[in-house]
Image 1 (cartoon, rainbow, N blue to C red):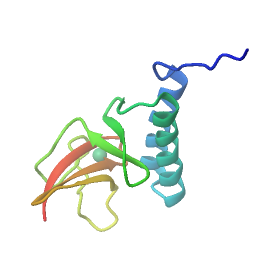
Image 2 (cartoon, rainbow, N blue to C red):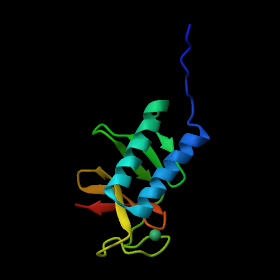
Image 3 (cartoon, rainbow, N blue to C red):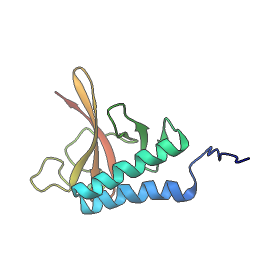
Image 4 (cartoon, helix red, strand yellow):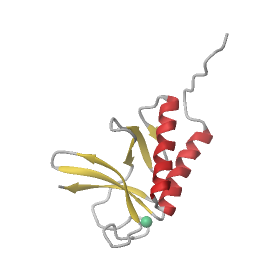
Length: 125
Ligand SMILES: [Zn+2]
């Protein structure tokens, strides 16, 4: 009789795959890397049936609209990356939107910077 494996907690390998997928997207910032990142994160959530995956700079939660929600651990109120000072809204900015949580009067936007920093900001609509 075949026993099914029950995973209780992401292995170090899966955890580092998630961190790496994020890092790669922030470094190369193209659509292909974004898709790989999102599907890697989603597959880890599915594998362990997690409602939340705690990573170094953010948490990952399943999204009803398909992929995942990336939630920041730190928030900013300014216009620049707290780590390297990159302007969020500049043309050719090295800061990318990772995830958006829509609210009634404001959205919580999760940004990821080329330098590897991940942070959130409340953006009024
Ligand atoms: Zn930065």
